Image (cartoon, rainbow, N blue to C red; front, side, top):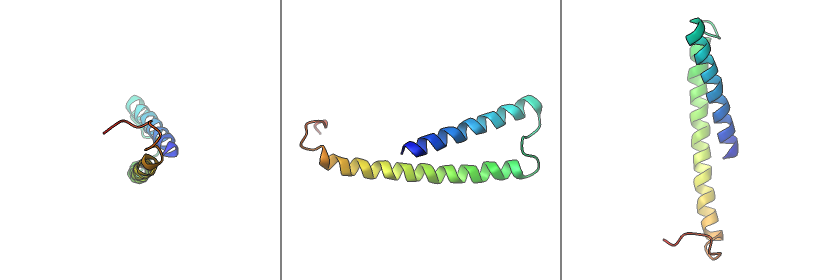
Length: 77
């Protein structure tokens, strides 16, 4: 889950930097179709990473609920 957060933040910062460069100069950092391919495949990879991180978080939450059930650390339902 932590890796998902770090990878997503790094990708977002990279996209913001590329967008600011494009807005300020009018030229793309990666010329030709490379920029569009980077955006497309980058978004695809990040969506899979986020889905995997979300599923892992759900699984850990489900497993840890049993562990903390008798400890008094959970909220009453």
